Image 1 (cartoon, rainbow, N blue to C red):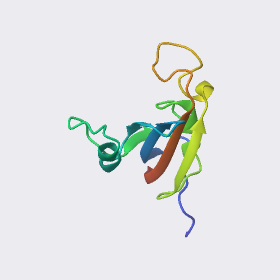
Image 2: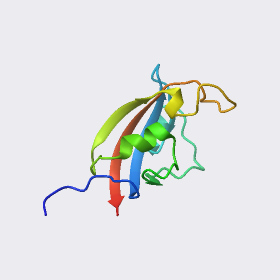
Image 3: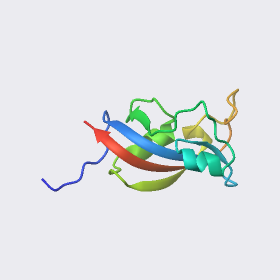
Image 4: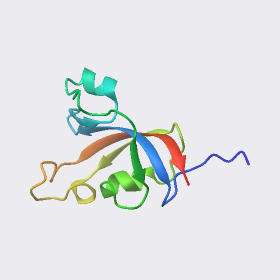
Length: 110
């Protein structure tokens, strides 16, 4: 079976990510080097791939949706509108913003 694993709903996925605003400013990342280069390194944070169950609503909807169908080592960049992120309005500091995420799958567990 040479078919590569693709992320399906319910899989546990390890994903590295970089979250940016539309202007290109990084607001979050799972990668230490990126955080250091962006001047936002936090020594108390553990920089490693985010472990998430695909399709389980553990992350914002646009991020969750983007994972489905990806393969290990595949990288893709998605623009997530407010409706699929933190909403148009609200108390969350990212509400009303379109977020740009670069995602790279590192592991897929069924």
